[in-house]
Amino acid sequence: MIEDDVIRGVRAAREAFGQLHGFNIRAMVADLQAQDSAGDWPVVSLPARPPNSSWLPIKPLQPTGAAIPSSQDATPLGSPGGGASCSAGERPLDGGE
Image (cartoon, rainbow, N blue to C red; front, side, top):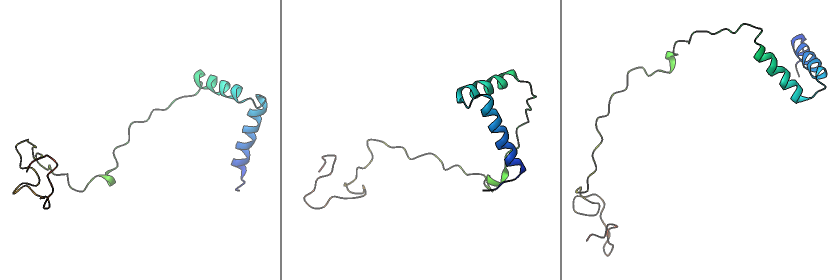
């Protein structure tokens, strides 16, 4: 595990904060929430970053056109010109001949 001055400082601060509250997690959370709501430090709001153009497509997407409408008078499967057909002795699922 890496040990340097920053890590040692963070761990010492964590230990001191825990000792201050008797290592009671509820007391520590309550104290942190109180410090947060006191707002004794400035809050910085930055403007939104411009979008990253590296993920944008190189050329714009083209419209695909309208979908083929579905209708009840379309040729059902299994009928002449209607795609798949049934084997001899089988009946189509829609009950047709």
